[in-house]
Length: 592
Image (cartoon, rainbow, N blue to C red; front, side):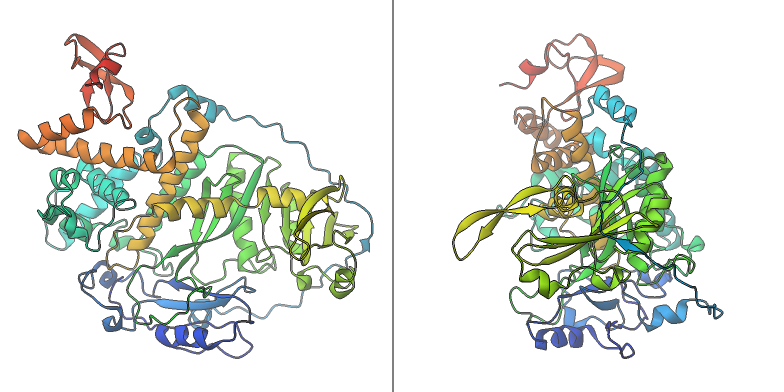
């Protein structure tokens, strides 16, 4: 987080005008609310003038600065109820250009009929030659990670960091190898973390980490980390709050989509990049459903591969003629990104924050299938049975209607609660049975379940799976710049995607997510130590890692070198040890 000059404001989704408050007041207000009210969350947005030069400066030592001493003008916080699909505030409305009053658009009349849906989408027959090509390459974890942080991205970050340091009269001289070493330390902090990051370099036996200490000096790491930069300050879009990281977002989205598995089913939802700064309020009760951080719109595969993402800025991006809210417009943006690979019959799943009959109609015209739970006021007055009446019926009862003109179905189903669901592609049949646990009788009962409910429950969890993977070993090292935690999120997302590709491509030698991250971190750190250290330090690294039986991969090299075991010429080497080794000598070289 950076010391900036924008006021800390909050947006409350109420009928009254939004009121400016301090973050501490917001948290206290949430604590005082009754537990029966709707769930709310807090998300942070960068300041309006986030493209200003002041946001490049650190506010101080992240280990020694207390949240109560941070200025109240650091960030914007928005309190958004679970029902809200947007997060606009007064400042956002002021930033938008004045619009001329438009004539009221006459909404089409919907004619609802009780019958099953008759979709006219083509069946999924697409193949994925790119994934077959990745399987044939047999890439190591580092090779998969570098599909996203590729040479172009690494060189771009190096150039922008050196440019920014030069603007501050500092000759940094950052190289691509050093940047990879910094990335390795950030990745390592996800599974080995200290209260203070400088403890990695302490000589005390209880904290010293020789892999980090031998790879790069502490002061060099701190210098590089403080000048890490992702955009040219002279070419920033002042209307974009994420202008400081926009080039990185564009590059990551391009690489994520380029190497994404081509699948039929995708999930869309909200992710949260947690804000790790110190907060003055420590009085949030245990279990209070409040999350603090940047809100990110995410589109993923059903297994959790992140295909497209966009950080929320709290402003509307929807074209007026679409008539969609912020959430619906983000779904359309994700679909547009998917269709750059071909106008195929994708099937998108999302929850009630995004779903509306109008959105289903727009996606249907684009040739895209969609299914999602929906709020009653977005069903265009579909004449379904009253929820109270449906609750009096046995569990598994449902009612449904189809819009004759748009071929969109809305279904209301009674299980433990009443659920509304909408689809433009899947109907009631074939209805099935699902198990329901009865708490009072402590038995399992079979209840009827429409087909669109069953498919929705199977395919909707992609964003949640991605969040779960990121949360396990997320980057712990944070700076005081407002976007530092977001950079950690991007690194974690790239590692998650690389691991998802590893699971698809490597059937024989699969490793879990922790082993995958450890391999990438060790290769980056040891490679830098091998090139920067001499004598005892590099020799110790070689002898300790050679026999650890963790993450050794044989790869092809263009230049022939001598085999470390038999000393004859070879064109293969161990990626971790950085030693030339024949395939026939590979096993013997790594066994004591």
